Structure formats: C-alpha cells, structure tokens
Image (tube, rainbow over all chains, first blue to last red; front, side, top):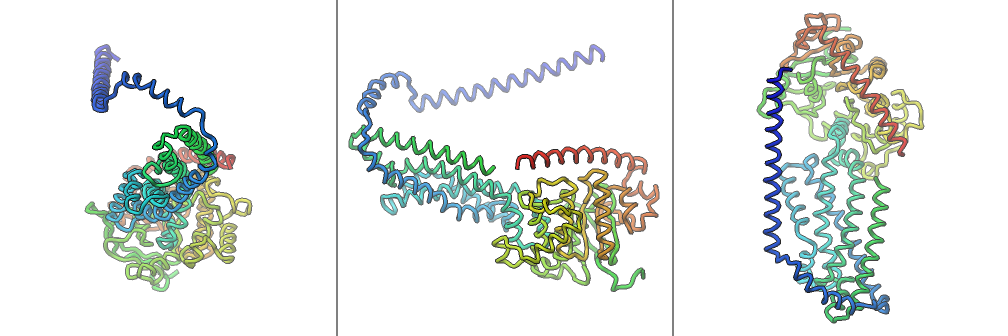
Length: 269
Length: 289
C-alpha cells in the first residue's frame, strides 16, 4: 500500500470519528436540555426535600410501633385485593385471545380489521387501570367490582399485544403446510399457531397477574375496594400505626406473589 | 405407456399466469400435462418461478389467470370447502420441513389428516384410533421405525428425520400427487440420497405423480423421468434428463455447465456444515428436555 493511499484512509477514519463525536455531543445536549426543562417544570428542589425531612421522620415516628391488632380485620380486604387481581387477569384472556387473532396480520381476515383491532387493543392498554377505575367507580359505585372491570380493560390491551406478537412470530411455513393438507382456517390456528402461542401466552399472563396484584392494591385509593381502600381510610383518619401495618402486609404479599410468578414462568420456558 | 391417452392425465396446467401486484408475472401462460406415476423435476436456479408454479398446483397461490385440473377436478371452479377437500389428496413437502416444533412427532403426522378431521375432534385435539394407526404406518413407511421417536417433540429430531416425519404427514393424506418444494436443500449429501430414494420408492410403488422443484442438476439427472425448466416465467426446456446437454444446462442456469457443477459442490459443503450445526442443536435441545 502506498503512503498516499494510507494517508487517504487515515483521513477517512478521522472524518468518521469527527462525525460520530459530533452526533454524541448533539444527542447528549438535547437530553440534558430536556432534563433541565423538566426539572424546572416539575419544581425539582433538593432543598425542599431536605426541609421536609423532619416532617417525614415525625410521620414515621407516629407510625411506630405498627398496630398488629388490626391484622385480622385487614385479611378480608387483602383477600379481596387478590381476588380482584385473579379475576382481572383471567377474564381478559377470553377477550384478548380472539382480539389478538384479529390483530395479527397472519390471521386477520382483512387488513382493515387488523388495523381497527390494534387501535382498540392499544386504547385499552394506553388508559391506566387507575383511570378506568375512577370512571367505573363513578358509573357503577364503590367496591371491588369496578376494580375488576378496570383491571380487565387494561389487561385486555396488555395481554392482547403479547398474544398477537406471539401469533405473528409463527413460522409461515407451518401455516402453509397445514393449508396444503386441506386444513380450514380454524384448524390452522388450532394446530399450527396455538402450540407456538401457548407458552408465550402463559408466561405473559402470569406476568400480568403479578402486575395486577400490584395494581389492585392501588385501586382502593379511588374507592375500588380491597386493601387499598383500608389504607386510604386509615390515612384519612390519621391512624398511622394502622397505615404502616397495611404497607407491611402489602409488601409481604407482593414479594411472595412475585417469587411465585417468577418460579412458574421459569417452569414454562 | 401411451404418450397422450387422456385417462392417464393426473395434472393439467391450463394456460396459468401468476403476477404478484403490478410486477412482471412470475409465470406466464404455462401449459403442461403430467401423467399418472410421472416423476417431474422443475429444474433451475431460484427466482425463475418454480416455487410459484408448484404452489399454483394446489392453489396455495391462486393463479391470476388460467386453471389447474387435478385428476379431473378443476380447482378454480371449486368452493372454498371443495378446494380444502381437493388439497387433502395433494401431498406437499417443503425445504424447511415445516413441522410444528412443540408438538410430538405423532401429532405432526396426524396433522396430515386435518382435512377430514371433524370439528369437535379438532377442537379437543382428539384424533381417532384410525388416524393414530395410519400415522404409525406412515412413519414406518417413511423409515422411522423406532417408536421411542414418536412421542418426542418434533424439534428434537435431526434434519433427515424431520423430512421423514413430513413425508409421513403427507402419506396419511393418501395423496394422488406429491408436490415437493426443494425437499433436500436443507439436508447433507448422504441424507439427500436417502430422502430422494424414499420419495422415488413411494412414488413408484403407489403409482403417484411427483412434481418437485430442485436446483441440483445431478439429483435431477438421477431421479427424474422428465425435467422441466423455466426461464423468464416460461417453459424453456421440457424433456427427459438424457436431453440435458451442456448447452441446455447453460441455457437453464444462465452459466456454463462447469460453473453449475462447481456451485453444486460448494452448496453440498455448505449443507454439510449446516446439517452438522443443526444436529448439534437438536442434541442440545434433547439434552435440555
């Protein structure tokens, strides 16, 4: 290689380096600017946090010791929360699965159906369950029932997306082989696609069960029953020793459920 | 055999054209007649419309114009249901085998019977005793005689075994015609001969018509009764393998015959490496189970 060629290549390398450095600088500046703008908008203030510390410790002191005598009376609401999560995860399966087959481009009868079904699933998923719950509590009244419906609606959106992505990942060759053997659309779905979808379905549904257990504790805050409602009441009545008991109970249960769900999901895959 | 006696015709391709969208047609005005028991190889490099023509034969790809007649049945005139029933008697095997990985070997084979499976049986994944018996017979016919294999998941098998399962799946359809899309392209050299011998043997004994797309010249020479080559979407050669002179080969593959030979050797080496890799993966897979 001649020196001239080597020099030319070196210049090209340096040019490449300059370009990529400039890109990093530009992107970094944009992220920094957005961060500062958000901090200003959200009144981010460490001094304020520091000033608040004495009040926080005071509150914490008033929570001590936890009032364990209320534990038996919290069992009912706690179980109600778990029931809400279980129903709010199992009911949506029956809606998410058919919707997913309409969403997936390889099983949807017409492309336009797929577009509409995706919009629907996206809308269900985008609205947080807390907002669904607020609306539903207003519509059907207080209690765990609106909570179940809120979890169901949000989970249809979440599960639907997991399901249709699994359907779309099916090898088109398998579908072709089934069609070539004279299988109807239903049989292609049932024999060619479901075996592929089932493990993903089970693991994403377990994931949502775990998520819904967390979500259902919060739903009580807007009046949708369960341990969250007990927590809200205790907080409103300044019964801080009861508040801490609720919090401890919630954390314990959620940790157990997280472990259980992780264990079951590991078994599937 | 009488060259053009009509009762002997199994597949009649009538002026078939297929265009995808507004592009130039993949195949143009194809007219062909395949006799009962004839072993036909569609020879040529990829992208000349072999795969499209093959898929037109069972209407997996619907021709833009023209029609297909299989054993007297005009596919274009059939209802949706009628077409599914007609496909039940047209077996098909593929380059990538197209088995359902997570299902057992036996279930995969019985999927060949989906065309006649009643709805309630399909819903509960409940194949009949006859279906099970037919599947076992077909597996033995396809050379898988070890019952230990039957309940294993399909993805634990080697490439050659997978193609045997796919052949068994096709056999339970009791086909009149076998369509084979590059059935040996994913196999190593030894497997290629075994699978080709098996298909040829099944076709000869049952008197079945075989239409197979291939790009391996030597295999076509060895097994075909009749070779058909496409170029630019039209038939450029149609005759017995003995007429495949160097001049014809050059026209079909658009390069000198010696270069075609070289490509074949290179591809065989690649296939051997691939097969070694995938059999290692299959082993790793079965270790995990």
